[in-house]
View 1 (cartoon, rainbow, N blue to C red):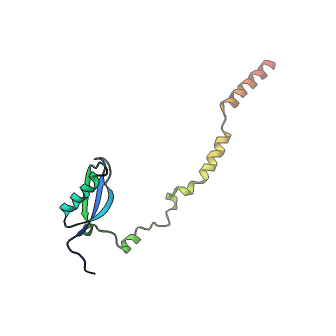
View 2: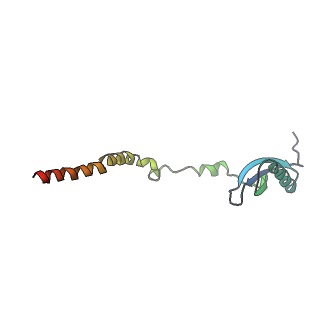
View 3: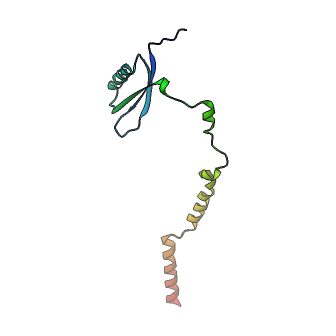
Length: 120
């Protein structure tokens, strides 16, 4: 199959407002950046309001190699950084809450002491 050199692949990114983050939208084929931008604008103007659109030639995007992606694996000796090691705290907190004194119980002590002092 002969590759068509006229059209190039572009990736389209957009954001809804000036404060929104850029989000990937879709790919398109265009002969140059200017037409890629026009095509992306035409696509969005029919759908939703947009504050900014970027078109990036796919060849200009660098992705990680397989070897580079393997360096992203987490080290297994950092369990103390995971919250799963603190699971016992939920049980401990529940036990603590059950032992807490409520207002009714505290007031009942006051009534008990008052009755005992009147009869004593």
